[in-house]
Image (tube, rainbow, N blue to C red; front, side):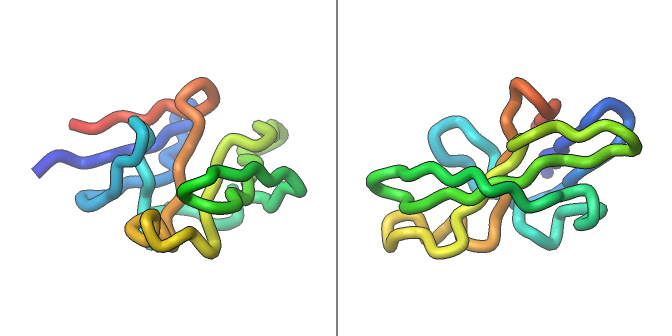
Length: 99
């Protein structure tokens, strides 16, 4: 079975055998996050008409902070309940691979 992994350089942020894919984004279950302290709450939010309001995390790795690099839906709409308690990472900021 393939594994999905999210990395920032050598730091493994998340790794999972089971995940959800929505609109080309890999959503990792919260249990797949390797170091919760690397995720720092952000004030940023966005809205999707079918998923609901997304909240964001910045990633802190050593002295580096990557703003708004991950997002999640705390209370997704019914059509997106499969990604409740899941976190996705921007591929432009974090390397996400499946394989």
